[in-house]
Length: 412
Image (tube, rainbow, N blue to C red; front, side, top):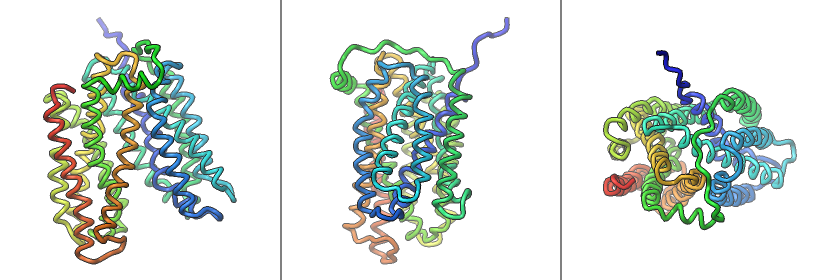
């Protein structure tokens, strides 16, 4: 008899990860310079606005997750959030002449709020769609793979679409808006709503606090935070390392493209390894690969283009494990322990993700300054400090995360 079961929604679900990842990169990378070049906006004022909106954004994520468990379906929330995100991105990346602090702050609030609603519900929806453990892993891998494609596109398009960064960003914003709305119309209607359990009647803070009292979730979140800081430190310092240690700033785009492309290409490997070894041990293998790679990075110097390109590919492969396996482990937990609280848990998850980026920058950049490094330096001691922060600090943090994961592997 012919199998009448519907095809798995892996592709349609994963495609929605592309615009979400695409939207994140310009906000963090391009917006500060775009608005600092605006007349009447100083770098300090732009930085203050970015800090304030990002802080509020991160703190709001758990509460957005709690509310998402109670209001509307995941599908409707994503469907509402994506057009708002598209609208906000077009205004943010193509500001009118004379756009000032009110314009910047308002558009950032709209973009970050819409992004959080879409990202948290998209992630929680994946936990509710996956069926068995292997199905949840495939859904997460699909989401993260298309997300990496979105990052590569967001990095490349501004330089390809205009003669100046400002012109390229404006076209990028319009292209993003059209693509996001189109993907929403194509992907969302056929997707099933998933198996969503009724949320408890608890108020926001008690419900969020109770999610953290689950030992398995708290253990996984702790390992995820440690490992995330280890990954975010080199992300915060890579452009300095390329410019001053490898001394090939002109190849920074190539190195980043190789890193993200390898991450996407390696996702099927981690899915298969997780099926064979289990997700905790497969994730531990990814951490081990990252440790070896960062130990090698410490030995590189000026002109080591080919070795560093190989290093980017290998560290990109390790990135695939970090992207696919922790959220899949959380989805497994939600399937058996956290009925009705998927949004709250992914709200905490998104909060930790954003906090990792802030903590890494807050740790690595002042440390570099205290060790005597300034951008453009050729002083051997300063470059040794840069290499140490870029390579050795993440190695140590990865080892700590790996030990924690080994000890907690049976409880998460």
